[in-house]
Length: 146
Image 1 (cartoon, rainbow, N blue to C red):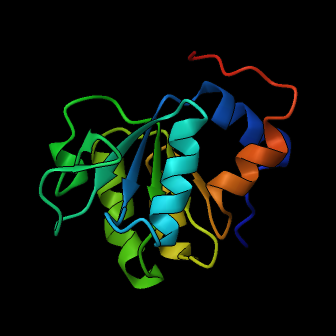
Image 2 (cartoon, rainbow, N blue to C red):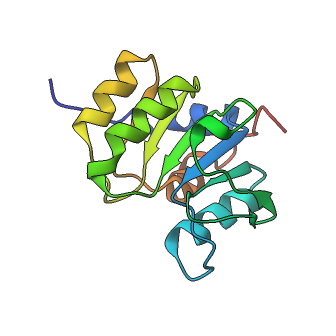
């Protein structure tokens, strides 16, 4: 069966109820897309949890973890800025921490990761920019976690 992203209405529900977003592959360089998207989401009130094995310290004022397993609190969305071939591994890690949503950024597609997410009871979203979807789906909505 072919993968289908959730409806825009469902994506809006996901974003309205999300608090913590772990951003896998978040760069500490402000000219990178991952940084710009995470910065925009942080400014919309979402808690960004950076995940990057090559960065020690903080990104966007938040402690950066080397893996999802190191995060000591619940994660609502795992937003992935990695190449498609690494996404199945990230999906397994997201399932292991009990994340609710696996979100692969625009240009990132992994049917295997989506299957792993579905088997773990997570919602999978692929090839969509979380910042763009937030702008489209949250108009007129109030976040439930604020």
